[in-house]
Image: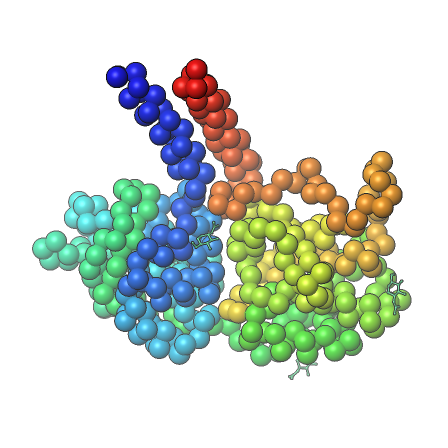
Length: 392
Ligand SMILES: *[C@@H]1O[C@H](CO)[C@@H](O)[C@H](O)[C@H]1NC(C)=O
Ligand SMILES: *[C@@H]1O[C@H](CO)[C@@H](O)[C@H](O)[C@H]1NC(C)=O
Ligand SMILES: *[C@@H]1O[C@H](CO)[C@@H](O)[C@H](O)[C@H]1NC(C)=O
């Protein structure tokens, strides 16, 4: 009897343990379970702040959520501008764990937020204050003097010292929170980012207009810097026909909003503006993100502008559509002559599984995923032993 119970427990562990260790914390999936935060969750996804939260698996966090009514107020205060809403959602993502017990024990504190960590916010305004109120109450406010305190009305989920979801009465706001970068002139933006050659080609081919038309619908623009055009394997753009240049420029853009962080979570291939067949893949290793054309990889250097639904990032090298690629061809492997163009994933650059893509150092990430893999392997072996003994 006792033996059978032990076997049952072992079996249950076999099923549950790997699930728990494989599944990362996914804020979207968690909030899907709460109808009252539906609007909040929708904006988290649209602005991709969910990916910023999910990429910090090893950071203690408290997400200050708003009911549908309070979220409507926030959206209206932000003038229904997605970049402005993104600022606010980042401010509501606190980079420390809080619950009633902790606040009552330690009292008022200042806490950093994602707004400060990832935005252009001046250090102090990106903070929130944690305030110990009367009785059992506590709340959060902007760091500015005299800011209103938004009381925590519900501890939705608390996982001590790791992760909390706390509902606050009203949005935390301050003067300047909704300020967003002006992006009136794309050419100027590209030139200032050190992408003069790319900007000139976009003007010359008229692709600039395609980009501009997509900026308010969804556009991720990968702009190669001026040095990229000097690289040994870069095509000679001066000798290229306008048709081929156009294709090249369209290939450096995605018709959807992505950020450097959200790219880490992409599974499969991403269509570019050069057509659904002209797709690229993402290779992510810790904080490093590269775009893979199948022939070559380009590292994403900097984010120049993130203004939902438009994001401009610079690249260290040009993304060249495979059919226009003339660069250093990889050593002709003994592959069948009629092999399709799609090359196998490079063995030297394993992509980080999306739900484990933590934003800490590459080495650390590689080590921890290796460590995580071993117990799972051992567990699988143990499971088969248990199963085998049951079948006998
Ligand atoms: C998180 O959950 C959402 C909704 O449940 C899902 O669409 C998304 O792919 C998940 N993200 C990751 C990284 O697993
Ligand atoms: C945008 O900036 C470029 C480069 O400085 C300039 O040539 C162009 O006239 C500007 N366009 C508009 C519409 O202001
Ligand atoms: C575009 O490039 C391809 C590959 O280099 C070449 O075969 C083709 O002739 C070019 N097209 C034009 C219109 O120049």
